Image (cartoon, rainbow, N blue to C red; front, side, top):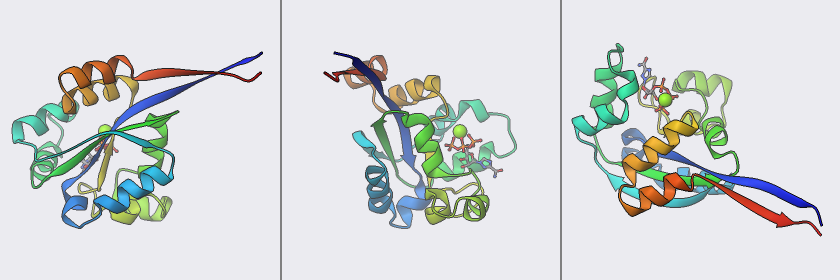
Length: 162
Ligand code: RTP
Ligand code: MG
């Protein structure tokens, strides 16, 4: 019969220190699962300044960089490996705009509108591309898991429709 091919994609999400501090971890994970994401990995850690600078290296030199790394090292974060077809774009959509106030006005149901604090402290992170997702998954899930996760970042599912 005909073959239907779809891809399960993986993205790297973080629940940032403000949302962890404010007790929103369980609500964010519940919203994530309700939207169809499968949590394939989770690690709870506090970043050092060096790790935060490495993770956000693309923003080095920008005026908000010091504030960003100070915020991201201010408490533990929850890093999540999320699986779903179209995971990268769909997670970005579920998070909403970067700025919490903008999220509140433009996407009031989004995670950043519901759980964010301000322009910097915005509750969640999501990889912005396939390349970022692979790099960030390897950052948080090193060793064998990273190898498996990054190599299998796109996992085709082939089903026979009969
Ligand atoms: P993220 O990387 O954390 O998922 O956020 P994003 O793609 O929506 O935004 P991006 O431009 O990559 O910025 C990374 C993070 O830096 C902080 N930021 N602060 N005060 C500011 O003007 C400002 N701009 C960015 C935010 O925490 C943002 O998520
Ligand atoms: Mg970004």
